[in-house]
Length: 311
Image 1 (tube, helix red, strand yellow):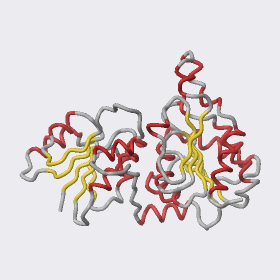
Image 2: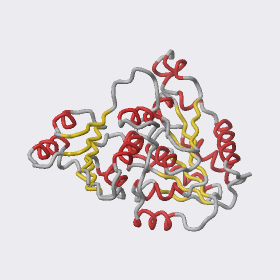
Image 3: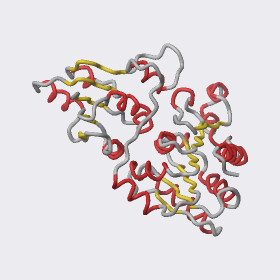
């Protein structure tokens, strides 16, 4: 039996991308996993086998000092925080991303850091409460369109009204008769999800506002059965891709080559290239998401649906 500690990053998308390294380290059913992270990370990883969550009330550094006083040394430390805590915990094997020498995706970097011979695809573990909450949110088995329009940074958010426009088109086309859920990853997203749902319902298109009240693991259970997820570069599109859903993620100022949502049916879309954005004045660069047209998103969404066999 091994003791694995995961120092989870504050960024939830990065936490999802690092989850493959966690799964790689859990090799025996008796292994014990300790996760040090935020309440949101706690929700996301609570279904992991033998997981014990350490919330921020006990800081990572305090936790690390406590581990030093224990007679048993940690077997594997997965350090996705990069702070002092990761350096002072006594450990037999330390997994940490090295400074990148070449541009590559995070799952490739984690694979190399863990000594794996392949990229370490994200892995999330669902539990019964998550599945129950997902089933109550979107009952039935028909098509399910999930929108993830939120995000920490306004410069990374596609205009909310365009999410509604694409949803209307899909709801009157290949996803007719299906359900629409609009998801938020944090309270900050509630105003956006509410506005989109209100706009859709004003046009007679039913949608469920999940901007609040659904934790990230329940969202993962919901996204596992989504026919399509469209969203910004945020935790929910990372989760959707990890759960195997057809996922279209819209990018602007961030680099999808390094941190795009990773999964068998994941695709990204942007307006201008990163090189063009970098060469633009700061105010223009901040408008990069607005340069992604509704038509382009609809076309990319249809391509994903057709690739999945839906016509």
